[in-house]
Length: 67
Image (cartoon, rainbow, N blue to C red; front, side):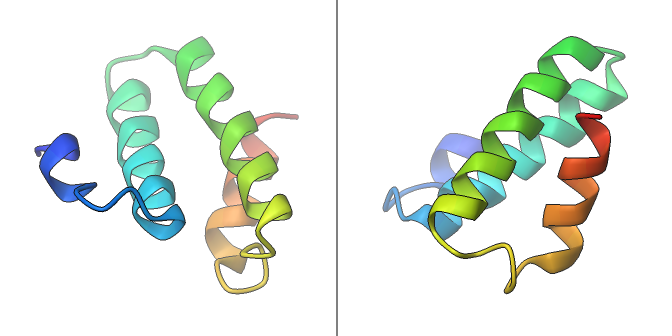
């Protein structure tokens, strides 16, 4: 996976997708603290941009992981 190449236009949606990919990588490597930090950022970003409704499943998943 080449996150840098996938996030070529720095759009909010591409940023969210890249962050979701990084969360998966950190979780697979057992790096739970790093994963939690990214999930906190994801929740904040989705709430600020009103994408939490569009990405409801991803939003709830990230939100549940930071509790």
